[in-house]
Amino acid sequence: MPASGVSAAAFAARLSAIGLPVRLEEHALHTSVEAEVPESLSAESWREVLEVVAEADRFGLLATSLNGRTLWAVVRKTVPTTGDVGGPGHQR
Image 1 (cartoon, rainbow, N blue to C red):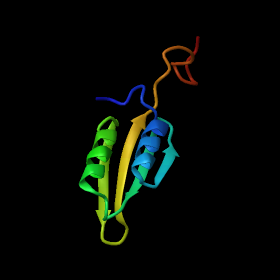
Image 2: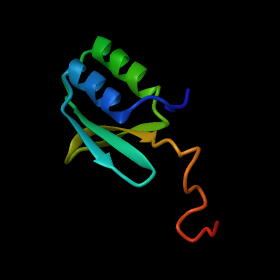
Image 3: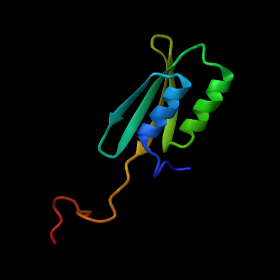
């Protein structure tokens, strides 16, 4: 299910409610949400986390022996349906 209509802030709030420390980073076309996943996360909490990120446009888990586990999700920003859709070089 694509995340259109689902905000990155909602993702962050849901992951925070599970107990994960969350970071948001704005980009031109999307917002990324990252959360550190502790080793002690219960199976039930993992299920909740997966339910949350399954609604993202993309998600994954980066696990290293040096930095632990970082969960990431990407939520695309909506494209405007009106206005200057031709871009800055478009002549009207």
